Image (cartoon, rainbow, N blue to C red; front, side, top):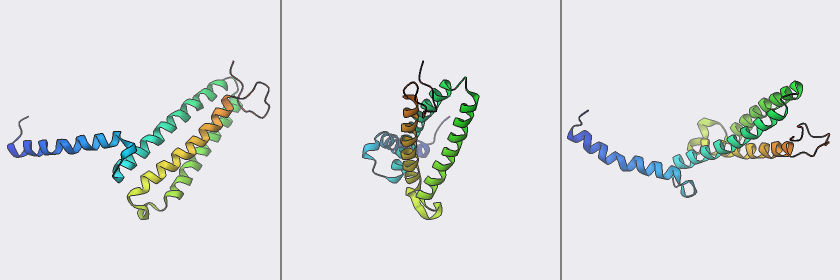
Length: 140
């Protein structure tokens, strides 16, 4: 592929913009524009969601021999995800009125609720043997 002089000049001028955007996305603590803040909030939520999914898989594994409890876990988690998403959409406000901050607000809410749910899961994973109030058996 051969670029014209104009095309080459445009490409050369655009490279610093892409490099700056990539660098800005990696430096979330110093985010200066809304697009970067939105992206960083999304990444932060994704990291929290991964931790939650890892804990969920551990709980599922402990319930592998208890189909009834496993079904209750799946039902509870589906309901919780529905609640989390509805609550965060509510907190974000009507999307058409919320403006450019909407993705950041929703992702921040999702991260906070996910962190709270993770604490619940960690509690389930650390129950003492014989604790009848714990729905997850102790690790073997």
